[in-house]
Amino acid sequence: MEETAVTHIHMRQAITLLVILMLGFLVAHKAIQHAQAANADGSQTCLQRAAAKRAESLANGFSKAGAFAQAENVLARCLIDR
Image (tube, rainbow, N blue to C red; front, side, top):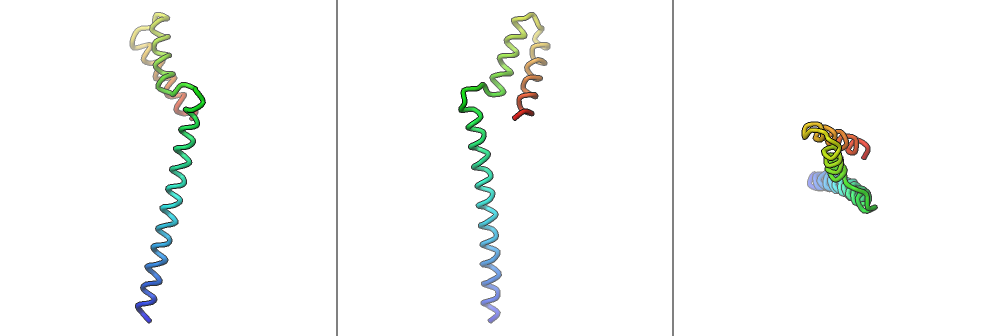
């Protein structure tokens, strides 16, 4: 009788662990799909936008430090908006 109770407890723990792992997988899969969809629409990535802003700032006469700061600002805003 005692062996059956222990087996039952282990089965419940195994099922609980399986459910948690499945939920984790589904959440991760959804996050990957969301990230791929954001990049699949032809829009630039955050890093591409930052690089373009840096090049634009340098072309407009900003110093390297100023252009870097402009690019960092674009990158930060882009990452926050996602």
